[in-house]
Image (cartoon, rainbow, N blue to C red; front, side, top):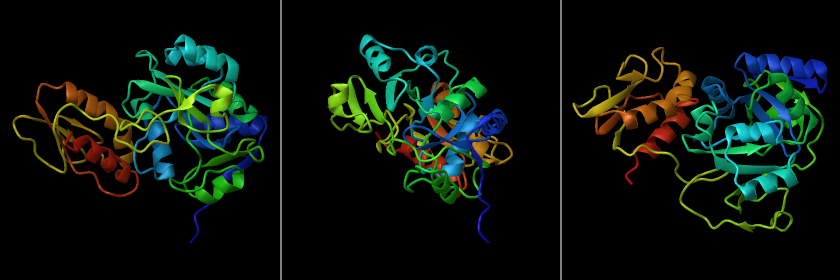
Length: 306
């Protein structure tokens, strides 16, 4: 039996109102931007953001781009230096993402930044995303609206085919103008090429590094400073145990065994474990299915010897 397709609403007042209602209820919806269709959720709610990963089947918790309506809103969640502000003033709204230091008081869910102290932020130019931002009055995390590893969607029907049965709504406003994910810049270097070229930006492509700091990169990211032991139901005397389900632990990712709730709590739990007095961390088993695949991918990275 085929999965049910999401509802496709033509862009307009009714579509934006329904999408905003769903986002306020913790759902994620697909919306066009000038780059590709994005899968948007409230960037301040970890469980809503976890729903993005669950819908995409994303194999690891890479940072997500946060969309805001204007530069002033961006400055409330990120710290701008002179160079970044000059780029923002010239190219926003538009297909430029800036990776900047995260303000501690920003209120952004740690799952959005993959536990990093930086945030990828963009002011989109598309009327649908701008209308949705205005209706929600919240920053929106929005990676491309397709199953992980699939071709990025530039039309509503691409989204419906890729995410059938996974999301409730797609706002249809035709083909996206750029058809390519945004250019990402950090520290005056291009991390990911996109619609804005190096020549237009007056910047060079960044040299590859072993650290992940933005969407579209593949290296390891935030990991605790302590050894991490996985798939255990009991902690040793020198371990802080992160539990799941019936394994209570010193804290629990989800007492009910809900993997989406566990994903929402994962980075906060790792931070608390890193700050705990015990010199080692232990983690209970999480089933290797659905979003549990992404949770376990992240945990294996955290446990990898450094």
